[in-house]
Image (cartoon, rainbow, N blue to C red):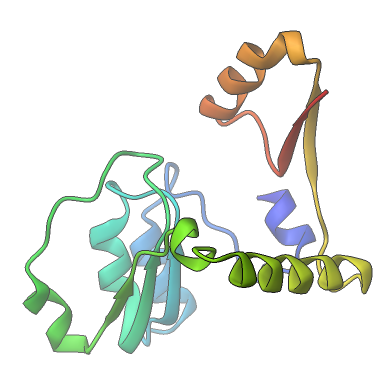
Length: 146
């Protein structure tokens, strides 16, 4: 939560410790949010749909808690919700696309428009420990194996 605040979050909510849907409703005075970016997946997906405002967008990009159950598309209709599931290989399917995105990314880094956080440096022989830490949610940012 501290890391999120350091990166500019106006509010932080630990979904394991409080009713996050209710808290979002309080913060937004019942209006909901325009967008949800969800890397958790299964346990937060239904709540994501609840907290979205009409015409909101849900970007589901991870399955940390498991895969999201199949849904009936009409579930999105009452609020006109837009749902996407980005997949990296789809964005970099061609060499030109890959180079274009990498150029944009490195330009942001060089111009300090993006802060890169290194969450840990592991010796190559400690690769298993790095994976354990990642899976155990003991890390943030990028992990380096050297």
